[in-house]
Length: 184
Image: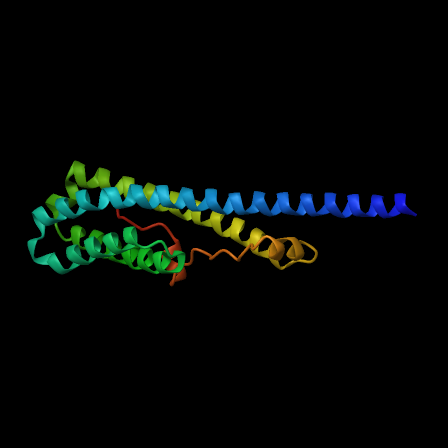
């Protein structure tokens, strides 16, 4: 009887270790996914001043759009809250679209090699952000499902695991890469 009890306790302990390790793996995937998003957002944020400066040289009267882009970039860099960052990045994406539309009104700017290169880079970064967001949200889904699933939830609660937040966009159309009108 004591051998059976010892076997059951060892099996339960082994089971708990396996579940804990799966939770750690899923949490680390969420962290890695967020790191990928952060890298892409940083790349986009680094390009924004160059884009603003390029447009500013041609479109002085578009100051409100330029200021909004700079303001949203700054606010997004300062927040660590995933939901708030998602909202700010959605708004920034919309303002970048407006900025590109403004640039379309200036043939000299639209033809500028520097501006065209910035457009290409931002378009590429938007694609990378979309891919990183998909990976991150998939990792969040897996972790949250594990935290809510029996028997994993017993181990998750024991070790204080919490649900991760999705990186959402307010508008489904903003989930698509920006149409930058290159080469038009």
